[in-house]
Image (cartoon, rainbow, N blue to C red; front, side, top):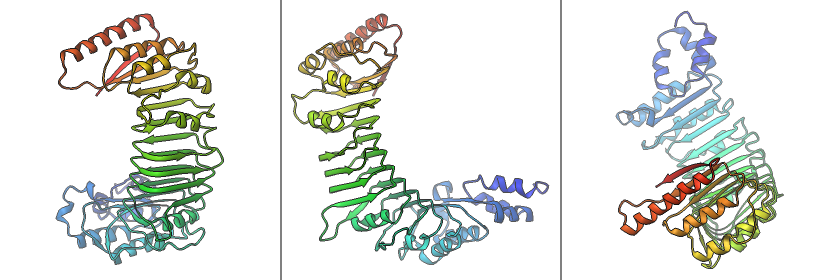
Length: 419
């Protein structure tokens, strides 16, 4: 190592994520120390990388991190993930942030301190482009525009914050493009019943495990919206029709409205969701550019409702990937497959069941007939550990029917996915 050029050593160091072994090695020669100071741009401290971290006292961890950070110059990415570690003192943490903030572009921060450190205050008005915060409290966000003039990605997980502060924080990031809100503890002021977020630059938002009465998102440039495991009475999206990707997974919502944002949708993925089909279809009916539609484990609000596949074929002419899984009934099969419609461009078809029945075989056969250019068929099923004789008979009959179908559609690749 003593004969390697400093630039080579620096290049090696800049690609190392975990720092502990590097700190030990850096003391072996002056050249390593110089390379460390001048060429290391990324530094990661993750308690899960140290199997024996519990043998370190909190003060010892503070000293180790402090000594390491203060050996660097021009650090651009800093990740400090201290899961299951006791609270740190606020003073050393503030020292880390103050020492690195002028050059830092990426900060991943999951550190509990006493007292709480105001990360926004310490890192505001700098070059920060990515900010990931976890298990922290955010209070008293200043209504200051462009507090984070360069921030493009913001991720908050298990963070306590008021609806007003979250709204102000988003306003303070004029270039934000990606926003992740996961398991937030959101509290409302006495005069506030609605959480309203507004951003002209936001393109991608992921919201998980959040409960609210009313959530209004105004985002003119939004391309991707993903809601997961949320409980909402009302969700409204206001925008200029840029939305291309809509995913809803295990969400309870009484009123869902994406306004005029359905015209450019290319992917709609809905799973574990109760729908009123007529209302849901109306929401996406103008999505003439739709290429992938997934309705998986959906439950109809009205048991007489069905997915009208004939209407799907006429309204979504570019559809190439169709995935369907819901409770099949004889009426759903009869009315769902009536008409002379053809899914002309569908090349991938995924169908699923929770309870196998003869109806499923009829459904699979009927849909295959209407996909003349199909290349791949994927069948998803649930197979219980203990099956009755009747269930075994059903599964055997279904398998036989699929074998007969494969002989008829030799160009179609068939896959089975069992749970």
